[in-house]
Length: 166
Image 1 (tube, one colour):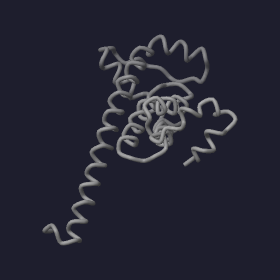
Image 2 (cartoon, helix red, strand yellow):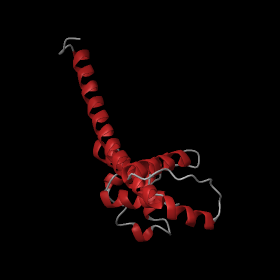
Image 3 (tube, rainbow, N blue to C red):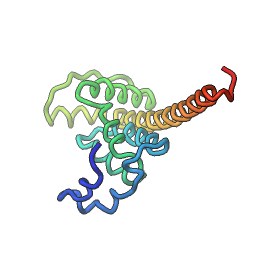
């Protein structure tokens, strides 16, 4: 984890120092971790090249753990991105009731602009839907898992002390 003191005094981040002082941005607790997962999963579905910056900014706004939110964005990486973004297109297409569009990828700006005219709406709708669903599910899973873990450790302590039957 980066040292918060060094980040606050870094020459490029000094202007953000007052926002980087909040302890929730660096500490690990249930609220901060669950919120960071939600932020990271949401930003992972935004189809732009600077998702980590968006995740860090959203983590600062919602005062959740920055490193977790930035790391969670890597759900969409060069290996997983084609499958996940196809899933987003598929979901958007189903929601809009559109027939599938055949296309073969070519890495050029003209291909990208032409294909976005045909699949842009379902793709972007799918990205928004997947962002919302995955962030809510991620938040609830972390909250529930954390609570379960705390309850389990509490029961184990009671058993060790002989205050609870096995």
